[in-house]
Length: 190
Image (tube, rainbow, N blue to C red; front, side, top):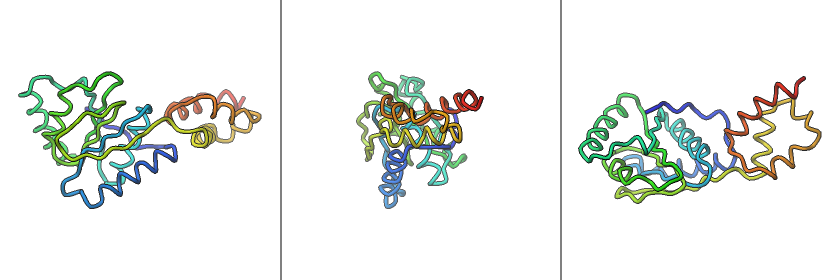
């Protein structure tokens, strides 16, 4: 398990997905569903989960699906341990699935948990618990341009209008844009 830091910047469309999830949870917090956040932007999916958790006053911990034990007894033990930690830490969990098939133990693990749980990845597994689904794909050109402007700050003026081409040509996640923008900011300031 690793603590997922709060979101520093998000695409507008991703923030809207987070708001939709929050609205769906409003009347269901006594028995919250599994929030399945799928699509082609894994980093954006994590951002949405972190945004929702923060809005609910929860810490978000991430667990790779590949790290889950395969033995049913170990899955049960991990679920019991997580339930205790979630209460003690005021936390929720995001199970991060990769691009390959979702391991079968993800469903059995999540079905043993109470409280809000997120599952992210390209595909959503089937679970016995109630669930809600949301799609998070890489930001469109408008959101990417806004993220580039945020990441580059005043240095954006030195790009001589090429930002529109970059934003429409490449499909990058918000976190990739922010990391790249921070690296470029120093080079553009020279």
